[in-house]
Length: 495
Ligand code: AMP
Ligand code: MG
Image (cartoon, rainbow, N blue to C red):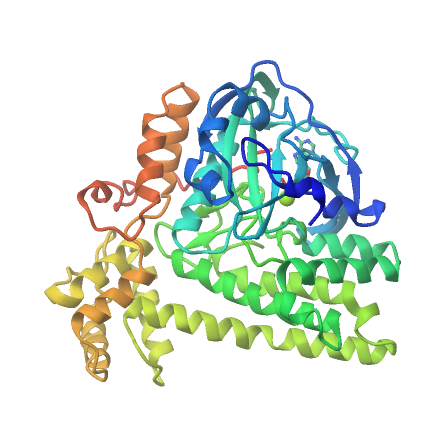
């Protein structure tokens, strides 16, 4: 750690700038552009404490100035990161066009987290963009990323949303905002694609070393570091996408620049949660071909990992044919690894404590009956969880689900194969079946009120989403899906 990082500031900033020390082609100096009237819309006190920050010193005006980018925290060395990416299958050079990395906060227990301002003004990579962000999408990222964290799914987090007192021009003039994003890092598949495209082997090597140090320290001594990294990322992505499937999360824009090597969910744009279960579900208005549909997420992740593997080929082996063979062998394991994690997710959702042949088919039958009846994904599994002890489950309906009597009998028979007490089964199911997720209509309702200056709806929603497995009365009203017969939910890229 540098001397500078050891000097802790009054607010608790303890910033390192390790990414800024990487070769210069990977980043560019970019200072946040001050805004007219900084204010704080949301501030995550609990996360601040986890980061070793003093919430008292960051609430009010001084916090607003920092979170809006008008004043830099002690030790910040602001940069924009360079990266490329395949967007809807097409390679493009990108880079942070509206996000600025201030440094890496070192927490009291020594962990290191990127501190990034999203919407902080133009950078050398902005192209024609204004470098700004609108309030609605930044609040949305805050709500959904924090909800994902509470659901136990690896994700970037949100420390604050600052208002700017300025407007941004989108389809209309909208209030501007800056999100303070916390991430294990912002190293993306696209970061490696960018380095590989430069054809600079030493650059690629330093990026591999850096990524291993930050996320896969156990592999630093590996004989083949690039291969160890590739295998590590494949493992984490297989697990991540299986976890998404378990809660009905649709990322919406799984471009390779939106896939983090840390294994965290990153870049909450047009994402949304399933109401009715249907693998073909797409929310994003720009995803016309359904490339990023709910059920396609595992194969898209696999495709993205192939782009990472290609970028790493020069380091895998000095004989290119051999290197390609190694990359293919590593990639070939993805479907099996995903199936392994997904089977675990489904078993927990059904309360199955051990593995038996036929478990996957049992789960598939439940999902298929849900799809056929238009049942709500979250509510169906919640109802199933509650039925373990009561034995009561209502018939197939558009809101809840039974899977039908024959299926229930099969499921109960399967539960009978295990020694576990009902309470144990129920606890396992509850750990995998949330009572509440950020339902689209609830998120929209909170955003609409917030945009009118009323944050009470948002705070109530955030409190409920912070305890998604609670069966308490405060969660009751958030269990139900939207009224049937409404328009299908649509999301927009939110830039
Ligand atoms: P995203 O869709 O947010 O993943 O962004 C894709 C790319 O477009 C990234 O390089 C962003 O930095 C850039 N970008 C998105 N919105 C803006 C904006 N308003 N100004 C400048 N660059 C942007
Ligand atoms: Mg992105």
